[in-house]
Image (cartoon, rainbow, N blue to C red; front, top):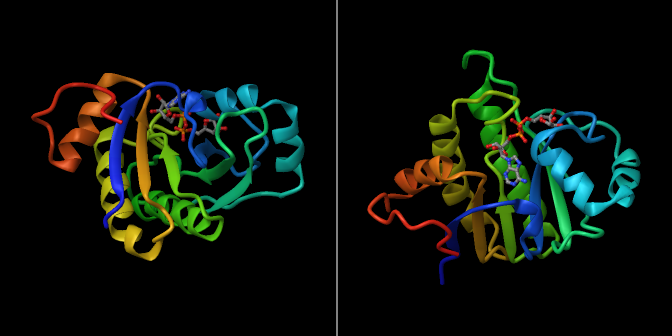
Length: 178
Ligand code: AR6
């Protein structure tokens, strides 16, 4: 039985899944964008746990509890800042998805939701990022059999359309087919 890949439009902090993924920075101490939203929703206990982890290099991931979030865990990924593509950005972004799925597997997370890592403040071109996200998850899923459901949580409809195109179901315009 293959795992399901889904696209939804909305706020990732509202999703009741085993793990939501954060688009963090190397300090793991919070920031703007989805990182700020996750820390606000999870409460100060999340920051306290993050402080115990130290720094996380770009392209890697760390796992914490979800505290006041409906999600049981947060997997903090550090995506690359886009510098034009010549500094290993593609590989570093793919590394985030690999590292997150590895942690989901190790922690028995059957459902995991990803935001579009690096496509906001870090300015990674969104079409390219969606392609890397979908391809890397598809490639990695056989190595993470505990993961049964992957949700790409897009903040807006334009981003969801990019994921639909990458997943080959651009013919279905309806949002939130979870
Ligand atoms: N739910 C789902 N997606 C969201 C949400 C949300 N609540 N909020 C924003 N997005 P960004 P980055 C989308 O900027 O580019 C922070 O300061 C957003 O539309 O959150 O990886 C960190 O601390 C975009 O598509 O993350 C780092 O310093 C995507 O999430 C830095 O930003 C990622 O945008 C990381 O930048």
